[in-house]
Length: 193
Image 1: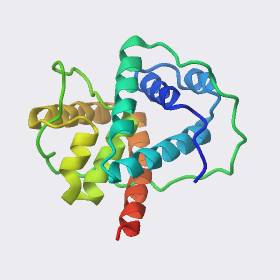
Image 2: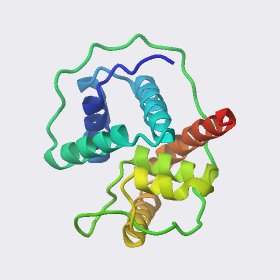
Image 3: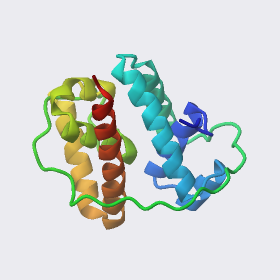
Image 4: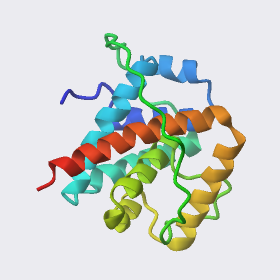
């Protein structure tokens, strides 16, 4: 597996900036990525965090969540931006029919009532895919994303459901991310003893 170009802090800022509505091209330029580079970084970081989580080492997931929330609320950019990466060949994933509509298990942890989602689109797609592919590990998945109470889980799902219903571009991006994440989780299940 190759190494991510971005630090964890830069990766968290990138996702927070994109989720906050900052101009996509501007955000990607700040970290020296294009769309393909973004997908690659997300896949690499996802694999790293997931591997650690499989060993019940949730420190990296927690650090990411803390960095993401810090950047989501402060909007401060990371320091310094890396040089642009060489461009690999294009790859277009298949889109799923859409998220499953089963009710989420119990709750997430939130400090305040959320008006919008707390997870990034990427994190929500990862969570949904993990729950779809490995429902027997649902509690571990919820905990990894900081959603340990039933009420918080419900708020997160309702917030994303509203956003995905209202924004077709966001819905398309979710479907792409969700499909990528399902492939990722399925590949990890195949590797388990």
